[in-house]
Image (cartoon, rainbow, N blue to C red; front, side, top):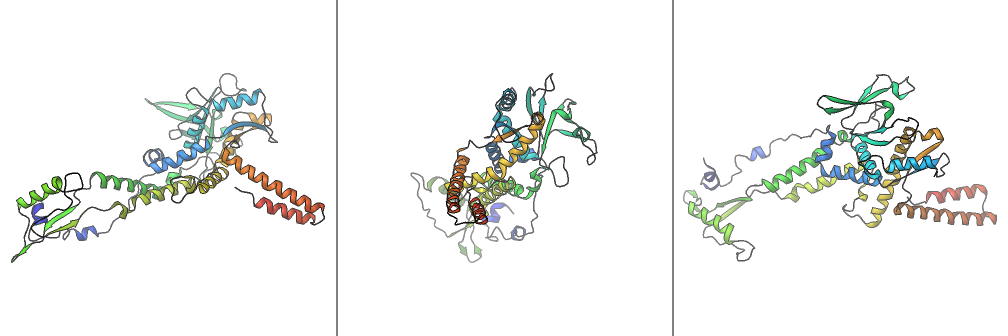
Length: 405
């Protein structure tokens, strides 16, 4: 039986009759392979957005050199170290290099910084470069718990370069930064593995929207409801052609078209298209984006597009993101680079400072004002004998607990 006979013939006014049981059949879940972290970053827009947003925030930091007491250092050695980090190699600025490093760290849970040390080993490297974290092969000795030197644990690094060529890097020339796995103290495990479900759902939502936009087919089925003594009367070929022609050319909401179509016989309509809002595809993408932010240690309030977000929520969200995630991770990076560049041998350390950011400066100003006012009040009461030392200490602790951020 042909398609038109099925749709418009006497014996089948409902085209869903034979497929109804199939539509209600059992479905199985579909999960994508999230082991290819680079593919997830390249093909899942909300995931890439979340990673890039965090990396951009991290790249706003400024490098400074301090002594162990936190005093800023401005001698030639300190200036050279900062200059290297601000201009690490011929093809990247300091911010580009830092942003790329952070993206690799967030996606792969590992980053590899190569130091081109030049001819004089006791000086700062000539250049710093991020090795492609998705391609680096770490050669391990198999020994771990009784070793005291990293060279006895990691024997080196290999980078495949095509044409059966491999570049080998010595352990001392590469700084490995890892968000260590649960049972692996050397290497990290990409967050895409844990994000299998939201990544799959977001991928499915985008694919479903693409099908609905590009392959949705007919909006519905128009059929004749007129009957005679033998049952339903199908549309004749002439009626089918006239209705199709009128529907496309004569009727609609454009200029010169009539919004209402008139027909001599009784007709019925079965809707085939599925409203996108009923599938909640946009909500699924938003839910996935929130999961990605949470996994990266951020919060939905850093996104201006989040529902119900106010300027105050955005401000507090950014402050929390810096204080809870960006700054602590920057400290870990700075600690690794301090040793890697040999600054620790001079009792100095690097710090990735975010003190210059206006949003954090305001927060520090508010903290200073709270402390200043609390200190003045406590001193006045203490001088008057109104408080014991214990009461003054409790008042200070209470003031510290009210500090914003």
